[in-house]
Amino acid sequence: MTRSHAVFLGLTTLDVVQRVESRPPWGVKSVVESTQLSAGGPAANAAVTAAALLGRSTLITGLGATTAAHTVRADLEEHGVTVVELASPDFQLPVSTCIVEPDGTRTVFSTSALRSRHQLNDEARAVLASADALMVDGHHPVAAGMALGLMADSPCLTVLDAGSVKPAAESWLSWLDVVAGSADYAAGLGTDLEGAVQHVLDAGATTAVMTDGAGAALWAGPTERGTVTPPQVDAVDTLGAGDAFHGALTAALLLNGGDLARAVAEACRVASIRVQHAGARGWLTRL
Image 1 (cartoon, rainbow, N blue to C red):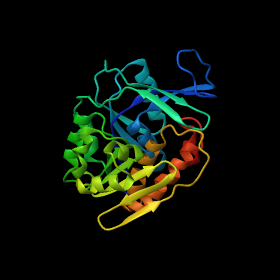
Image 2: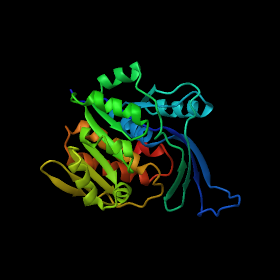
Image 3: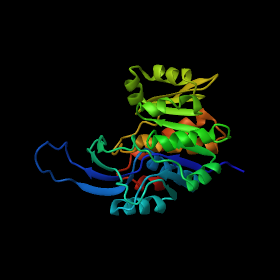
Image 4: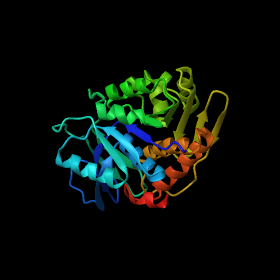
């Protein structure tokens, strides 16, 4: 039987996405081309992508019970994501303001959950007990650390979305099967992609993947290294492209028996589809 239960633990936001015809000036009112509300955040977007590829996924996160939270929960559930709630009803869901320019460049202003003190509850523990893969994004760090500790002696594949350097996540590297970072992560370490790969492996992670937008992605395991050049496409919306990569990578590792080279190639393919389509969800039908 194919292992297919992917669990994601981390940040969910309400994304308010404004598409603009040109970069707006500061200090004045501007008219936008379109506006969209959707669930966002690294773990949430990755969970949506994995659900599109696997048929379902589970997201352990904090939503609360505000109007924004209801909107986000409905979007996630519509796209095959089962939500396990860590937060109390009065939790204030983080909100992201996302500006997308005509060439697809995105600028994001957001609160985070890096200082969250949420812990795992019984429902989350039960879900983790049946997980074939667990991806964490560094947010809700107390709960994530607890989850990775529970997975330490299990066959569950563990993945870190290392989109940027997060102190708590750096302490987890030796627990992880796959650390998937980016040029931003490398810059945060003060090094390049090769240096970031070596940093991750030296810290004890089993394998590492580093991406650089449309540039070649590097991957390395205990005995092999390689590169994957993403399909070269015209980007119209890069919002969530890295999240799509991480969700697809997690799903592809399950579908391909842990073959890292094949999983990276598939994740690059999925991310390239994402950036060719405007909007948070319409691109999923192209998978």
